Image (spheres, rainbow, N blue to C red):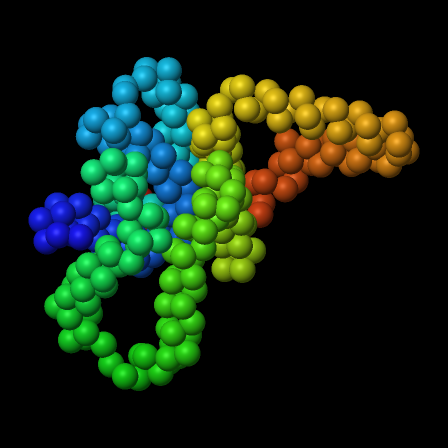
Length: 296
């Protein structure tokens, strides 16, 4: 690793990694966890566009049309957001942009014949750059305002555990892709987003409107279609149909019970018994609108 290669290939990745972390963390001061995950659904779109701009991938209008459903779903979810803060959205979009640039640069680093670098080795090189940038940013904006009482209130062990989990996450991603495939990593990411939205609603009672449910469903559907592709989805559906038919022949009664329960659940959702009420407070929205209409 020469100094020239380090400055050209490693430092920019560490810098954009740091910027994405900074913007991503600032977003949590303004937006809910559920809404942040909905906005993050646009990350594949940003990666696609940045890849085209940097010449990593060839432009494809068909792919662009497919990912447009993700953008449409996120726009609908944003319109339905109850606690919409523009500054938080700007920070999140900035974090998505920086993360997309970083991912494209990492892809170029790992696939280029000039560098031929292992994923874990690349993490070893650009992680210190990211750490130095984060420390310098904290030294200017955060450390002068931090008081020890606040650290003790959060808990030193909590901060240490957070750092250890973050490190384990970055390492596990590398090993997961190495042991399985990028497809498995993609599906795990979609499941993680859904679980985070659900946890935000269940644990913190984050209000989510019916329009957000609808918009996020469109975004997730577009995300799965974009990452799997029509051929893969068709093959998976065919395999699922075969397994379902085999299950029905072995346990016909249980199959009828599952179908009946599924129909009842769908009707319950469509009639507004579940989706419009979970974590959604219409009185809060009404009072917010009335408060905004009152003259100051």
